[in-house]
Image: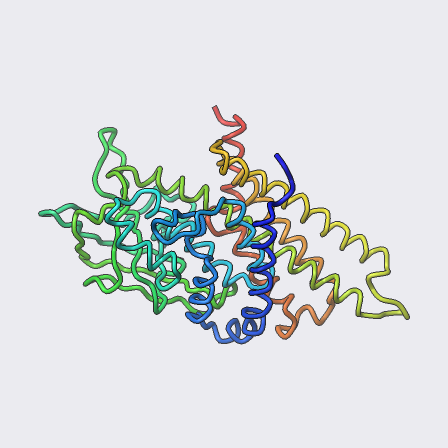
Length: 384
């Protein structure tokens, strides 16, 4: 593979970096402090074409490759994890399943508003008692007289309770398979449907200006036609969705690491102790050298996973590797950057404190680091 970006990808990176620094950076601290979700920024990111980036223009998307999408997330995360999370989750978990599995009628009904950033969409997978063990879901959808009757609850669902959320895709048990195991399917539930409640979650350690929701389904009924994809295909659909989603999380780790590294480097070159900048002390210079090296290694790993996907090759193992490595690289980079800031790194007025907080979710969301290692170990044949 070539490591050179195309002229279009270079232009995209420059445009999104410029946007993030001009439009997002001045608002980050206040949005984070007040835990405010910004519909204004969502609409502006929509105007920039950041939603539905890999979706066909027939449904309002940009028709770009996976690497271009990952570059966009990387540049947003370099400035703010919350806005990057909004875009990443919407592209992979909100728009992705509808674009991949929806009927033409479903695509034409929902995608134009979603790809323009006018509306958002959530993907209801995680439950209070079903996180890493997604197969332990208890939410049910029973087909009764041509209607899906849904009962249950979901938690930690991104973009699912914002003022502009149009609906959610819900993974639910729809019956039993011949082998006695649960049949899992995905069903569309529009916002405002009777019995459906979406409640925003507050007091988060991370991604404070991203919208995170609890979902409750109390005898919610939707038409049979709201089934997304094949009945019984929900678990496989979920796994495929997460494979792509992990590329976005990896991009957030890569971009966040880049942003934290730049903050640490800038501070170290300004701060003086013992008559010289702290960057000139070998112990600190080596910290920064390690950061720069690991970031480049993470970028190569992630971009290769994107290349595999864009060329129609299996990429699940590499997506897990990229998600695992990029998230843990950011962990190491933000720790070093906070250390370079000393006591100031512990004050919320310094952006590095937010980077330090925001990093942790990357080791938990869309499959914990432990689950990624399990996926990778299975892929390399450790379990027979």
